[in-house]
Amino acid sequence: MGWLIRGGRVLRPDGSLEELDLRIALERVIEIGVNLPVADSQVIDARDLIVLPGLVDPHVHLREPGQTEKETIETGTMAAAAGGFAHVCCMPNTSPVVDAKEIVETIIEKADSYGYAKVHPIAAITHGLRGETLTDFAALVAAGAVGFSDDGKGVQRADIMRQALLAAKDLDVPIVVHAEDETLSRDGHLHDGDVARELSIKGIPSEAEAVMIARDIVLCEATGGAVHFCHVSPKSAVRVIRDAIRAGISVTAEVTPHHLLLTEKEALRVGAWGKVNPPLRHESDRAACVEGLIDGTLSMVATDHAPHTAEEKARPIETSPFGFVGLEISFPLMYTTFVHSGLMSLGRLVDCMARIPAERFKIDAGTIEVGGFADLTLIDPHTFMRVDPETFLSKGRATPFAGRNLTGWPTLTIHRGRMVFTRTAREESNE
Ligand SMILES: NC(=O)N[C@@H](CC(=O)O)C(=O)O
Ligand SMILES: [Zn+2]
Ligand SMILES: [Zn+2]
Image (cartoon, rainbow, N blue to C red; front, side, top):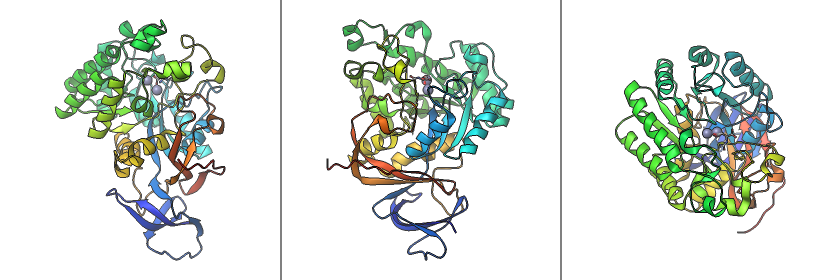
């Protein structure tokens, strides 16, 4: 029994695409070859489709425990499957905060019981995200945490960050940094630039992010620890990260599709649907992020999927929470903008969206090989379809990308040998 995925163009570990058949039995890929016999497998016709390893998102918010009106582990992992993701790392800014091992265990167990995607918790650096006392790193890692972050807030105190780097180093896991110096960002809602001024809304300057990134690079080098920077957005930060990597300091960084594709101007067009932390910045910052992605400074793409209720995101900019969803559109956004346009190879994009985050967080994923887990995403590189938030499986609906016409949509996602998502309704267009 099992599946025979026939005739798809399969992404090979060297980045090439080859027309191959894949046989899956139980949870694994057991055979890869040309014209494999059907035997007792059920056939999936993958002609005209690209077969990729299940994608890995190093940064999502699943909101459970505690904020299940925004998202649940079930709806969040359904959205992951719909976006082609087999693995997601979830952030600890839930209620209660993920600062105790029982919470880590419950998240993993719940996700496994639904079976849509594997969830890898990133536990809190400090109790209650208060920035004061370190959590029990050893116990949290033993329970399954793959890193530590106070995401949603920056760790304001350098001494605490230094302690965290030393503690994480002993366990060989990264500190995942939300860089935000509150003395510079406080009460801001948008990037500190022309649009914020035009709307008379207090801005968040680039330095609020970049100074903490610079501090943590220094602390990273001094301690010999490892830092991963979340959602990098200003050009000054891209530059200091590039310099740090060149100097051999153990830092990695992620960038989001929204910081690669959008600017502060979104606030004028979509209001609070474009409000996010860090904010969408100036065109020159956006261009620097693209440069960082292309040259490998920003080696991972993360959605920072941050669902909120429709009511919350319908408020005026100043009272609406930061964040919007991304899991279900991240791959088509990246594929259309960078691969379809010829700016980047498919192999490199999948490195950023699977292989490199898998390596960083020690997740067994990122390539298709015999004996490996059958986590596969079938992509349609021909059909264009508009982003329609009403079709999202996530509870969150807000995205500034609503209405964009994209190609490269996942049409079928297999997780651990089980079909966990198929796209049925197709709104085709010829653009
Ligand atoms: N990115 C956001 O705008 N919001 C995130 C927090 C975060 O990622 O910092 C959230 O939890 O809503
Ligand atoms: Zn953050
Ligand atoms: Zn986040």
